[in-house]
Length: 255
Image 1 (cartoon, one colour):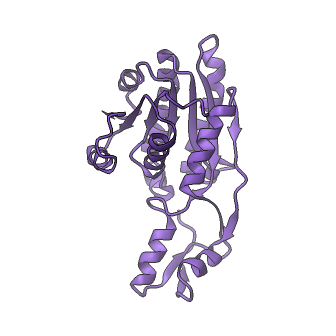
Image 2: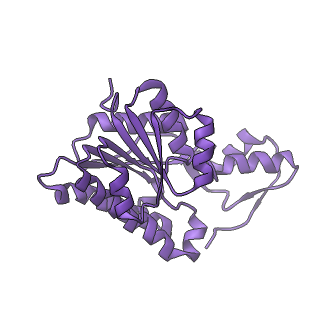
C-alpha cells in the first residue's frame, strides 16, 4: 500500500497531461481523503471537473505558484505535494526568459517554503532530462529548481517536510509533444519537421510516469533525485513508427 493511500494530496499544475493522469490513478487506486487541484487556468479546471464527474474528493484551487500566500492557503492540512507546475516550451523560454525564471525557479522556491510552513510530510517535484547539462534556458531553470528542492531538505531542518525530485524524459503523446503533431501532419499529407535527423529522445508513457512518482513517495527519505531507466529512440525511428513512409524535412536546431 502506498503512503499516499487515504491521504490529503496537493498537485500543482494538476490540469496538465501528467496532472490529469495522476488524478485518475489516485482516485482509482489510492482512495485519497482529498486531492487539491492547484492551477491557474479556470477553463482547464472546469474541464477536469467534467472529466471526473465532480468527484467529491477533488478540491479546486485557482492559483499561481508565483503566489506563496495562495500556496500556503491551498496546503492547509495537506500530507503530500506533487509539484508538476512549470513553463515547458524550449523555444518560448528563449524569448521569455524572465517568465520562465519566475515560474520554474521562484515558483519552485515558493512551493518549498509553503510546504515547510504548512508541515507537509513529503514533496516530489517533477523535472526533465533537459535539466541534465542544459544548453537551453528551460533546462537551466529546471536544473536550478532541482537544486532548490534538494537543498530544501537542509532548509527544512527540524521540520517534518522532506523533498525529492523525479527526472524523466519526454512523455509519449502529452500535450505539445511531437507524437500528436506528427500524426496530424501525416493525416494532412504534409512533410514532418525534424530539427536534426541525428536527434534521439528518451520516452516514457504517462501511466509509467505516474507510477514512478507514486513509487518515489514510498521510498524517498529526502534529498534524492530519482531517474528511471527508460528507452531512447532515434527521431527517424519515431517518424516511421507514427507515420510510416511520411516525408520529412530538416528545419535545423531552434534558437
